[in-house]
Length: 507
Image (cartoon, rainbow, N blue to C red; front, side):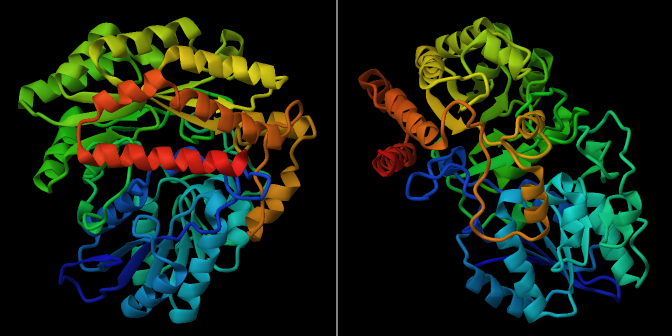
């Protein structure tokens, strides 16, 4: 089954609205080996529900219950473009929204062309990350009738309502066409809620508590794979939006931190538990803005006497031993910390607002309390002047001894301070990305900081780092005795084979 349809008979202008998460078989190659094959990346550790798209559908469902809504997650369901075409032919939608990341735009455009061939009169709207990063270029892509820049719940719903009423939609905040966006060229916005690279007024949800709980009936039939999970029955949840930090490698566009009310979050948890979900990952850009957030969340769990396993992505300077102990008592299983590098100098350059001492302390607390840890790590920084520097960086990771490590090679994407630095240093061509953003074609390779260490050397260092970390006898033994289920064992075995295969490719 490739989609879930939810229909309420209401009103006389019922339309079919489809949102698509396209296939991802032609993504930009981020870190190729010497044969041009994509190297292991953090995303290889699992697929997660595209919650942004589900939020948009759920808001539309609440505001316009008379429409017939469909969702196709080609990534989660491993659906090809041919399968997508068959499903579009079955649905024959009136309006189609396609979510995107810049690196996936080749597949996004192919999906839009498929829609146009099957249902020529359908209105096709581009949403997701790409229109935020490249709004003027995205609006020029001929496959799309409109784009949504920013958070799509209100903007897309107002677009659907305008099309239903045969009214103009170019005055909707965040909705642009090829023609309407031109009046904003050369008029940068001045709003400290957003990263300075957000260059046209975006749609934005100030009151996140006003949004309905995502209707997981759109995705409940999909089994999302995650090798860090325990049950294979995991739900992702957002307890907040935005991140106020200014890490130089990150392009999260919304800097205003907007937490949801804890009781609303736990309403969502209980709803998911009733649907059979067994573990929960808080997929916020930053869950623990500070330790008070963690403590207050635990207090809310205790008031309801809820029992569930959960984990989150966060920062080491947003926890204390007391807050971690309280969270452990209330079901916290794992934390993925953004460590990124292993020196105080490097952390300062990256504007991480922390120190190696704080990092070591947080990981030690977690180990003492029995909380699993993931260290998200990056090599290929501008301040790593040699392979020796990279290996010294990895030595800190091994010393830190987390339960899992995800080691990426620094990728330079528009919207980040590092991208601008690379342009200034002559390492990256802004024009290359501007041209590609208007006309995505296969074969593009992402940019990296290769001033001191070549990409081939970085790929080999990544392979070496994974091997050094995961193939330690101490690590293998500890990992084996901590395995809690057949699903977790299967995930770890498949992850090991993935690493072995990657190592052979890059050796």
